Amino acid sequence: MTPLSQMLKAMRREALRPRHQRAYEAARKRRRALLGYRTPSALVEILGNRDGALVERKDELLRAFIAEQQGSASPLWLALSLLCCAPMLGRLRRRILADEVSEAELDQLVMAGFVDAVATFPIARHRRRTFARIRKATERSVFGQIARWQRDRELQPATDPSLFDCLD
Image (cartoon, rainbow, N blue to C red):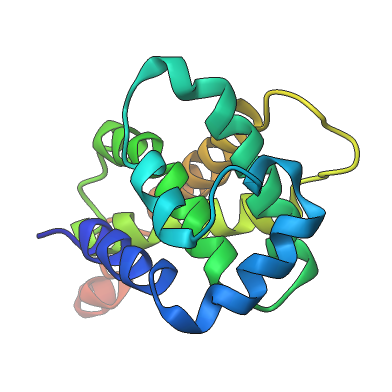
């Protein structure tokens, strides 16, 4: 099991913890998108559904999760955001080919890019296409970091200069 898969499983367990019920009930009063789901477990069930007809619904839910994440310290909202975007994160991870970096580091890079995208998403400025904007922000973060790694690698000398000391 990859670190990304392990993290998603952990986020599912986190979202289902009873300790989040109070925060969830308070958020249901603030976020219309959550009204149809009495508990976080009802949300986890719908987030696992890959039916294309639910795209708009998931986009609304993602907006609600991000707004709550940016306004509170509860890990519930990041967990739900990750579960909502899990298929996208998996596809992004499979697109990355980088020999100089371990699989675990790439998984962490995808997760970090996503967390940063959620934390910095301008929720008040964008009312639509939240999912697409988060995907693009995550991709920019991930591929930007890979480009920096590759640039740094190209700037490193191919041979240790101290090996040439004996030629003096």
